[in-house]
Image 1 (cartoon, rainbow, N blue to C red):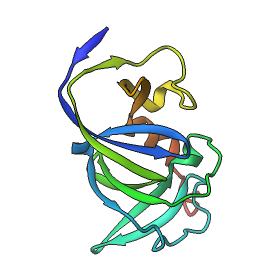
Image 2: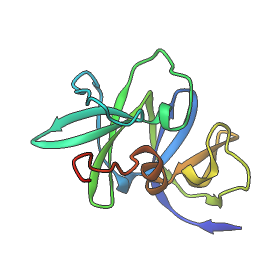
Image 3: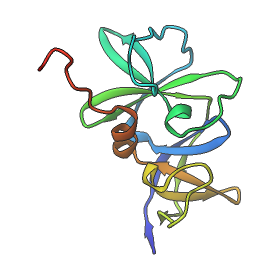
Length: 153
């Protein structure tokens, strides 16, 4: 089943996996990931935090979330908003911003390449490839597990 949607999408790469997000979810792109401060005893998926104009933003490594091999290449941070919180996502390359006028196809019942189906909502076809449109809510549930307060008995 297809839903006709006209939408601006940002296309990027995590390791060797192409991905997409709605532009309305993206706050900004930081080309340099050198300012990330590591947090001791954080989840494996959390690379650290950055100070973004006075706001502390948690940085997630999508390669770890998606269980992908680390690729030796440049890194960028895509800052997104989900549930009124800004989170940075480590990606390897921002490819393009497109106005997607074709239909988004519902999530297939199989993995889209390396990604589990709960990590994306639908797929778009571009250059004869299927690109998953990421589901930030589900990614954050996996990537940032709730931590119990160690001081509470």
